[in-house]
Image (tube, rainbow, N blue to C red):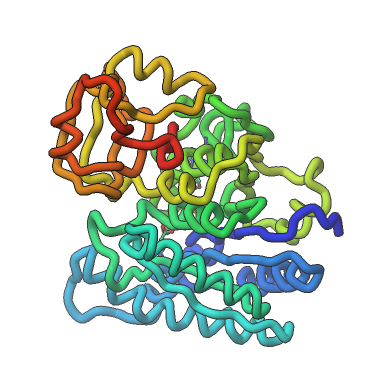
Length: 360
Ligand SMILES: Nc1ncnc2c1ncn2[C@@H]1O[C@H](COP(=O)(O)OP(=O)(O)O)[C@@H](O)[C@H]1O
Ligand SMILES: N[C@@H](CCC(=O)OP(=O)(O)O)C(=O)O
């Protein structure tokens, strides 16, 4: 095996693990476990982000009365996650590998302290040769507190754990340059920085998926911009994981080319914290121009036109350009009241320092 990678994150989508009728495809699971075990034994550290709780619970319980979507998700995932992790535990045990369950929520990444706690948990697992199997805690994550889907969660984990590669396994060979069902369309093999894919992506999702290809693409781009290679490939294909690492050129997939610019750990956290933003900092045309240049710049009061929302020092804020577009996310250096008092003034401290500013 080409020993190019020392740490990878693998996301297995609901559709890879569910059969058409919604029951857990144990044969597929077992095949993926065999591949992960092979990589693990060759010295690659693996973090597995596995969906499938809801899909595997659906076939186990048959509610007496009709449930709403939140109740259904909570019931199915509570039963299904136990079944899922039990299967993984047994399958990995056959290879002499110990696994551990990490159930998380979006809230568990909301502050830098929470984020570092999560990171520490997985780091200690890897140090002890335990494969973390991560999923969202669907029993308590509802509505706006939910991740868009496990693609978002996997991007956050790959970034937080400094994985070299994130492999997103779905039920499709990659991103098609048209409708996947159109015989004239084909898989885009490589995607560089700044490529707009919105024309290609159909709103359709596979039967058990939550986010669809659009979230996959957005997350993939963001994570690749942080220097991590992202691969979207078909988890239903035999030996796909090993093939992707051993024969990268000849294995069908979509590969997002990573940026060469290093991104600091704190900026990675900020980049994935947009959902927790408490306010907005609106900047003028000149500040927008400087921010989009290669220069390392902070958000200074002189370039701010107005502040929206109430925030405290260290809260996450969105940076909005003069045309109303979000251009970045940052950690505020002061509260919203103090920021308002210095708007337009020269020679004042940055409202968001460059070290805590992530430009999209
Ligand atoms: N251009 C495209 N290329 C590939 N798949 C696409 C495209 N546009 C939409 N899709 C849909 O995205 C689906 C995969 O996303 P999703 O249902 O979220 O899967 P998962 O459960 O694996 O996360 C595919 O099955 C396909 O129907
Ligand atoms: N946490 C859920 C995952 C739902 C989800 O977003 O799945 P996917 O479409 O695979 O990204 C479950 O285990 O069923």
